[in-house]
Image (cartoon, rainbow, N blue to C red):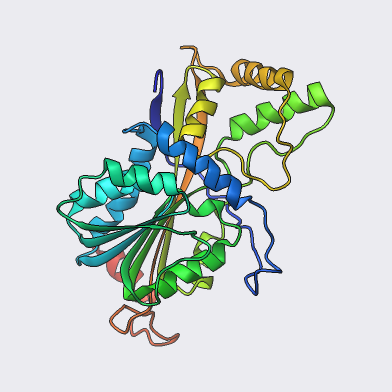
Length: 328
């Protein structure tokens, strides 16, 4: 992609708060995202996505780095939606997976992934399925990876519970989702342009999870040894229009149910102009922030380490302080 450069930045603070959805039954579940529209967007992205996208590649590599910390192999791995091609390509090189199951709601994405793969070394099964209704038996896989896909589910806790149930005991869950600071520059420019040209605002950028309660979400889904960390990536584009083209190619455009599908031409041009005037750098490029939250969790197993009971400690903090203080 012309003019695109990527910078990684660790955020100085974690301001996180996850949206909550009812998981009791399908009738009470709040539908924020149009899953059929998202499936259509991913069909289009299957043929627009470049063979090497710097952002998707970086996020996938950072997510799979977590596998390097595990001193075990995973006979069967399930890869869910999102950056499917990038993750499956990287998984084949890591050597920790014996069999791979690739699942996506988009038939075109599955087909493109199958064409692009050189999977003679790893047995790979391709399935068309929805992350909200996993077509996977309980306790059937050793590893589940979702890279930039789960943030489009209407019932995020429910999808994670299904993932936990699909894992074998001591199975690993790895996920990367976009956080609430993603595309903050575009949100500001879009809001100002709509207020100026239309006298009001309608949602043009999808709501995303915040970061504070990510660990609680993993615990709520029943995962043990939960871990969460956050990265921010600054991607530079030649213009705001190039950013929109990139979002379309990634399948990351808006998919809200309550959305005005018609964006007036003058509003779109005003958005691009405001974006450029407020955020452009000295070199003429415009930045876009992508906040990525990485989540790690395990399905419970007796061999896993557990916290000791309260009051079972045999050494006090005062003794530790004295010991290290005397050494200094």
